Image (cartoon, rainbow, N blue to C red):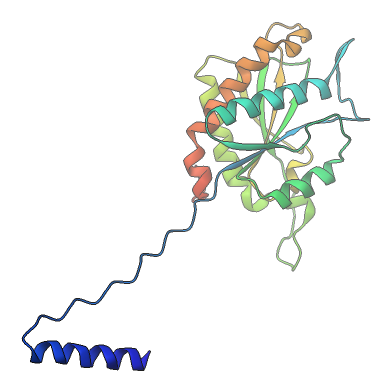
Length: 236
């Protein structure tokens, strides 16, 4: 570097002596900004394999409905330019601990568990309800309260999703519950449970009903995608 600088100085002096303007130093090439990390939404259809979940009708189990809804939600989000993955994309058996471990390893901007119920009406959006007295001050994260650091953000996302779906005049409620594996997750996490609006559980297997719910949820997530990308603040 010293040899190069000395040579440049001699060259400048020679130019001045001959009455010529010294050339301006060449600016170093601009360093490109690091690529922006895409928002990843991880969708987890509850139950599966040997765990059928609730029997919604004599011929339809919860695991079938959650997988169908998860696939539709993936299509809706992808159509809006949002990267998403299914934690379960077949009829496999996964424990809640396995789901939590896989979700934590993936590091999504948002985790969404999907459930279905023949009781109630419309959509219920849950966040974790953490046990009292959890201690995360040691060298290891408390498994039962892993959601603690992200809980305020989960609650903010829950409020925005519920408000966005309610704008469609669809019955939607925000709730907290000790619903596995929400407590064990490090990223912001929601559980969405769908129920029929007609009192007839067969509505849950309806393509039109599933599509309507998935479009409303996808619109809500797309509206907050920029804040999910930055991950700043306690509110999206």
